[in-house]
Length: 471
Ligand code: AMP
Ligand code: ZN
Image (cartoon, rainbow, N blue to C red):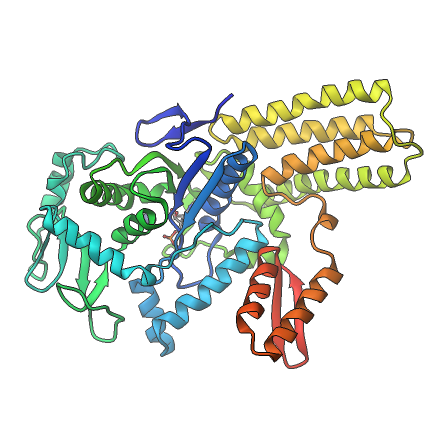
């Protein structure tokens, strides 16, 4: 069996064939960091992390890149409100976002590039686009992409250039704007008073949002990638514009497969900062283990809208706990088993249990249908609960436990809590970090902090010393 992925570009499920055998190059548009992330932002993080985990389980080496947009109007606005530099805001919320990701057991990306660190690459790509006629600089130094010059514009969102043009006609090019056509979009814009800026051949200014992703994807993954993903609100214009930029600059197909998650809604409206109808991941963590949030997200297929409600969260909680309890029981039975080896009946039962793994895989291979994959885990849990007894052999019990934890782990669900870091391991690492700091080896100290963070352990430096907690 091979993985099938619904490709927004073709509007069909397609068999996944990577560009390079055994390897996956994947780019997921990340958040703009001006606030704590809300659980709508968490949906792409969780679902694409799960897709990544499944591909890794299948033996692919996944190069997973996800950016932080750390220069943006909203960041600048917040910085001005607080009277600090924009990078104080972005650094703060990147750190907070990493904590939330660790709490949800979202693996850190292979690379998390920051837009502000990639300005040179952006200037270079913009220059290429100007040189080959796909972009132009206006008198005030703004650089625009000449949308009409990219013949395939609209291929992702299935919009026709003429229709877009028609819709845009009412949007007169305003006096301030020096665009050739309303559809042209910004690649570089002049600085305004009090804004961060960079030198460029056109003016002191900063990049537009779309160019960031084209450039970071090219730098860390190459001109042509396998999968590009994000929420469905990004299809137009963000991803459409990324395609126009990348394909015009590189002369190659940008991404083979485009994956988009549907919205997380509340009262059937998109959860968003601008509507004010959101819960942050941090809010949820006060009431629930974030594993419950993860379970909730995976209980629907990623392309189906998901409505947030207390009832569904409670259902997710009991669903998640059902798996954890089963694993706990198996641990207890395993510890107290009177014999080790498998008997004939147990061997037969394990053969039977293998069907649940096959079911799980079939669901995941059908465009990452996590809802059905979780059902397969439940069937396995029920099977384990029914067939394990105090008379069972240890090997049998251990095999069932392993099967449940492995399938859960592919979904990023931690169902055997003790298998994580022990308290003593954590404390030893904290001690080592303190020692490193004393000798001013801050690099090692930071490394330890990040290592712990990746395992969901958050450190807090207080006057009484270092405190830690599990995120
Ligand atoms: P933003 O910071 O708004 O650019 O969003 C970061 C990511 O979260 C993007 O992939 C968005 O598409 C996604 N996103 C934002 N709101 C929601 C939502 N309510 N449901 C699902 N995905 C969302
Ligand atoms: Zn992007």
